[in-house]
Image (tube, rainbow, N blue to C red):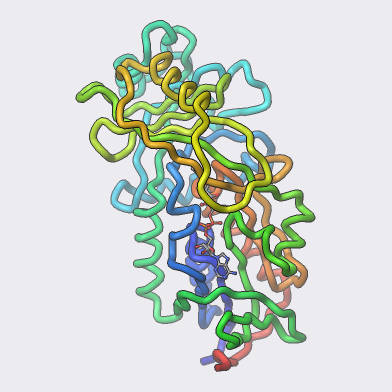
Length: 357
Ligand SMILES: Cc1cc2nc3c(=O)[nH]c(=O)nc-3n(C[C@H](O)[C@H](O)[C@H](O)COP(=O)(O)OP(=O)(O)OC[C@H]3O[C@@H](n4cnc5c(N)ncnc54)[C@H](O)[C@@H]3O)c2cc1C
């Protein structure tokens, strides 16, 4: 088989989205996904994930614009649902902007204002501004990406192998744990938060960008039966985000709290973080008290400017996507687009080599 052969390392949302982008090009003969555990078993499978269009740099704004033009074509059947958002305090926070802007409740059209009037605590309603945002289910969205990828005869998966890359004169050698090699014309690396722990060129590229890990906190809980609506809440002062989930009377929320440079593994939800979450529901919503509170404690990645990066890692034919917390799912289309564009800049020579066993 002639044509260009790419390898994508990592089967999270970013790896799967990158594979889809690569296959859009007719010159591409093969895309091989190498995943060390299982697709979507990494951090993508743990995310909420809100698609709230907040940005804090021009780069971030551009990523939102391009990602939303991809997302708009998708529906709830592949994991995207629309929600009214009650924004509290964002107008006063000059470091964060909302793409497309927000409107005071008095100017919101009735399909937006009616659910908010039902869901927002009347005490805070006068200071709320409104807009629409989305929730992406990473598992539903990932399953739909995998379904589409598996329909393409040029797509192959190698599951259960960790990969590393070795630059060669004509391209890149992808070395698997079992000792076998794949000769590729280019590689996209999307290995999630643990990238800095490795001892290879991707890890050094990530460290050069100042990538760090941080523990992120949230919870899932039940609100009083029948009271929950469809609104989402974003509170600038406490950096708390609340989203209804697809389960009856359930909400998910993320709560800012800093614990930097942590290793993989479980962590506890500090008492004060839990209390902040419980208080936010009481302060912002009409949904009553919380019960059955389940902590969600994970680790994710941050860059110094909190913006994701797409960079060449050691070799022009190896492109690394870093993502960052709160961004990797919603901005995956634009990040994958950038990774494919960067790979294409390296003068790719078609090769025919197969997997050397
Ligand atoms: C609690 C929480 C809430 C979040 N909320 C949001 C949100 O609201 N909106 C948003 O956009 N983002 C959110 N995020 C961030 C988002 O989840 C991540 O940015 C995104 O999932 C990263 O995707 P990924 O594909 O890079 O990583 P992952 O999903 O971790 O995928 C990487 C994959 O690479 C594999 N791998 C690792 N090393 C190797 C190797 N050497 N060889 C082969 N395979 C390897 C892993 O097994 C894994 O499957 C949230 C994250 C968390 C934790």
